[in-house]
Image 1 (tube, protein in one colour):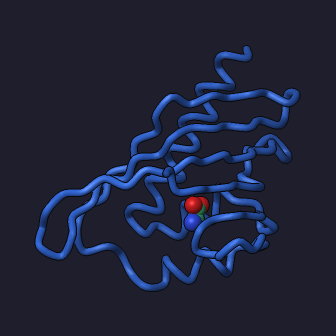
Image 2 (image 1 turned 45 degrees about the vertical axis):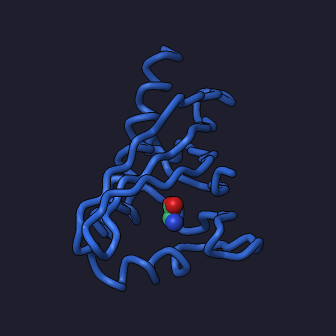
Length: 130
Ligand code: GLY
């Protein structure tokens, strides 16, 4: 049972990252608790709460070039039947303005909470790798 949940959490996280990559706000929103809290470089050291901060980037429109998100070495810790923490390195492959491919890496921890039978993303922390 624990292994099935771990696999589900990895898949949900990949779905979340894919929704960001293609600018799919509907999917991103459906996976997130409205009170999502986050530390990420874009917030310059502040804890942001709610989805408006994240929607700003989706509203800028879809990326004109492809992006590929890879989850490396995921570690899933179950905190009970309805809560899980996943930590991993995220690699984003993208093209610069000249069409040259680059990779950006970050450390991410995301917390999922099952509410009324549905997993919802409730908190994350992203740091750029050194
Ligand atoms: N910046 C949105 C996210 O990483 O979930």
